[in-house]
Amino acid sequence: MKNNLDKKILVVDDESEMRVALETTLKREGYQPVCVEDGKKAWERVQNETFDLIVSDVKMPKMDGVELLRAVKQHSPKTIVIMMTAYGDIDNAVETMKVGAFDYLLKPFSAEILISSVNRAFMKEPEDHRKSTAPAAKPDVKIIPEREIITCNQEMLKLLKFVENIAYSKSTVLIIGETGTGKELFARLIHQCSPRADKPFIAINCAALPEGLLETEMFGHEKGAFTGADYRKEGKFELAHKGTLLLDEVTEMSLPLQAKLLRVLQEHEIDKVGGKESIPVDVRVVATSNRDIKKRIRENKFREDLYYRLNVIPLKINPLRERKEDIPLLAEHFLAMHCKENNKPVMSVDDSTVSLLKKYNWPGNIRELGNIMERAALLCNEDTLLPAHLFFEEDAEMDSDPSSKPLSNFRGTIHQMEKELILQTLEEQNGNKTRAAESLGISIRTLRNKLTEYQSVD
Ligand SMILES: Nc1ncnc2c1ncn2[C@@H]1O[C@H](COP(=O)(O)OP(=O)(O)OP(=O)(O)O)[C@@H](O)[C@H]1O
Ligand SMILES: [Mg+2]
Image 1 (cartoon, rainbow, N blue to C red):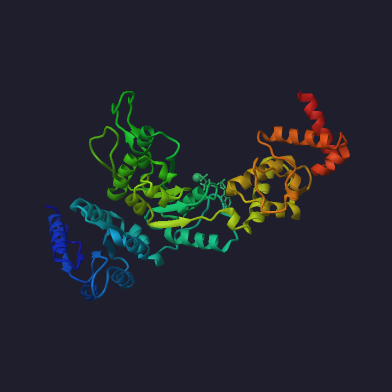
Image 2: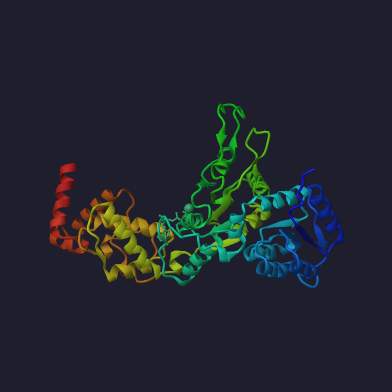
């Protein structure tokens, strides 16, 4: 039998059967747990002796598990706390992770799940663990964003602060937001701010692959697992070991795969396709979705238990139309970036351009703004960016004042768009180049050069 006597464990549960079950399981693993029946008794013990680990129920008379957790984290932050909870109290349990619980176990759970959680708690290196329980000990985690997150919106700034605070933990993060709002950017930021920053950040898009392929992408396969599997393939979970795994568009995963993922999240080990043994993995999972997850759950397309497993730390990114104060900042940022890429001097953004940008409702959010500014940077050869340089998607909707709509709406390459726009404007102005140039907001010289260019190509 293993000897784990150097680790002191306190078990807290008001149900005697549960205490006996926990005690038996832990004793089998070589621990000698102390068992008490409520938070108050536990708190008395904690003040007089040092425990390495506390396994506590949430709902208890006198002092409940959350109160106990708070008190313990204040008194002896190094003590690891695992919470146990019934399904109905899951929100409460999720809360406890933010207060500093190491893990939570959903009742009823098997002995294996308890032991797996306890072992993980003790396997962590002491330094690592300090970071994950005591927020005071994390000034060594620096924010080195790979790409800046630009915002002056109060809620976004709060979100950035929140990310800084939760980055050091290992808890799963679920990022919700419309397409192009910056979900991946935030996922990378979480990784960069975490103690895992120098380990891999691996992303997988769950919507992009059919079920079978997604499974081998995620978990890998053994050599000979199926016809054509003539080598052993490492899955993304293995590649992300010690680092962060981004599961993009997680709601698009098939139900069988969701079940498999749930198991991985609970047990921290993967089963390769065609593999005989489970492989332990240490991965921080960040998942994203641009869907209404609650609706997917109601439609039985997404497992509710998986949702709760993923949603330990929820992060919601607002669409751009709800933070229009960010538009001028972002527009200038993208414009400068694309001008530099194209070796062009950076132009200023005219006020009329800013007000037009603010009228648009941005269904594609920041990505769409980036694309529009990329085209604008190419199209504009003046020192000021005018509304005429903006091209929105075909059925763009403006909030008001249709007269300020841009000239035309196109799809296609930048070059084609530019050419079409110029020729169309020239036609509208009956071939008058001066008026066409004026209406386009470009110089007559630029217009002539463009026309010569089109002639020589055609
Ligand atoms: N606040 C921001 N500041 C600067 N760039 C941003 C910001 N938010 C998003 N971006 C940029 O916008 C683009 C889209 O962001 P990202 O890929 O993170 O969005 P997403 O929410 O993951 O989109 P999708 O749902 O389509 O996958 C990226 O190029 C990203 O760098
Ligand atoms: Mg994305």
